[in-house]
Image (tube, rainbow, N blue to C red; front, side, top):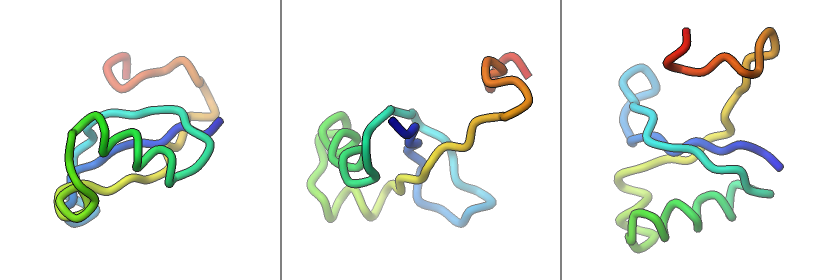
Amino acid sequence: MTKWALYTRYSNENRSYVMSTEQQSKAEARAYFMGVKQLKAEQFDNLYQVDRMNESKSNPNKGLLLG
């Protein structure tokens, strides 16, 4: 499975990470996030974007808070 991240919809430099999930496809991840946020497709697309999350290859256990 692929890890997908939900980001607020701003320019790439200012967008904020919200949460992540592991799903088979981007469409499944989008549907999952829409359900969590309880938004219709148009509302969701105006507020959020879904992108593949890149894992650190040097240390896959290294998290955002662990630095």
